[in-house]
Image (cartoon, rainbow, N blue to C red; front, side, top):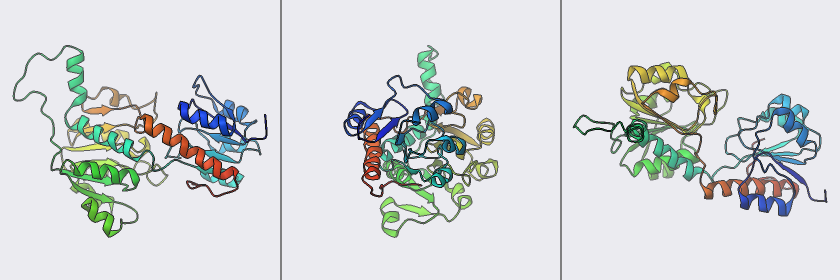
Length: 324
């Protein structure tokens, strides 16, 4: 290895991102896009000054404790960082960064897709066409929910939540939201958004509930049976945040009872292989495989943002997106 810092990229990155990484650093790449075990992460990190992981790699306190002293940074290729024990990283003096902003538009698009897919029974419609089950038309055939003019509720009005709210306004939806700190008056007015101080006050105002809060110990299981009961009957639930914010058993029970008309979900507890089996089978669930940021423009932008953070760290400067 030369004099450049060594960066271990845990997954295969977009071509343009890897080209810049190889140009500016000694790169340890993953050309086969293998999902490494914890032991493999620790072993390969032995030769690295920084790690560039995705949300698929779990840097628990135990894994972080085993990382070599030379690892100075974990520059995540993701906006969420619940896969990294930030307290353990901070204790070790390891800087942790993420990639906000660049994926807001793409993730908001998926939120709207999930809303429409759930509302208009897209899962059932696709199956009818693909499986040659479409035989006739009638006034009662495949009747779903119209979203135009309805109420769009947001939990977590951060970057993605605000863009999703703007997109919902394109459907003439009234925006309602809750957030730990209220938006400034100018932003609130621009979104035409009505603020609610608590989740409990927000939920009765939601024909569509869109979740955009990070997964933390405080938000785990946030949407539980008691809160779902506060939604209007026939509401639609959209989640492009993290699976952990939903109590799966509670949402599935509400779907079965019809209290929740449908759910559009891009994220799940136990993803990708251990999600609740009911989500795979329920006709009123419009499921996607965590593709909120999956556009060429966004994936390049995420990689460049992660590298910007590494550039700052190795130049002795404060990275813009430091989270620990």
